Image (cartoon, rainbow, N blue to C red; front, side):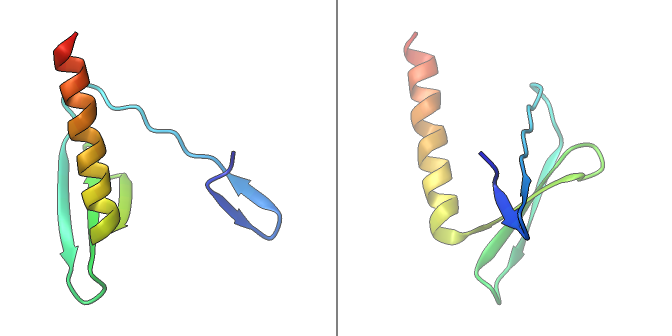
Length: 70
C-alpha cells in the first residue's frame, strides 16, 4: 500500500534500523510538529504532529513491554 498518492503515483517507504542509528529531533513550535532525523547524515526524516508523536511513543512503549515479557 502506498503511503503517498499524487497524480496516480504511489510511493512506498520502508526503513529498517540497526541497533545503533544516530537520531536527533528539531521542534517546529509554530506548526506544533516535531521533525525526527535518523541516519548518519540525517537522511531519513519524519515530520509528525504532537498527538501522533504521543501515539507513536505509546505504541513503542507497548512493544518494548511485550519484548521484555518474552
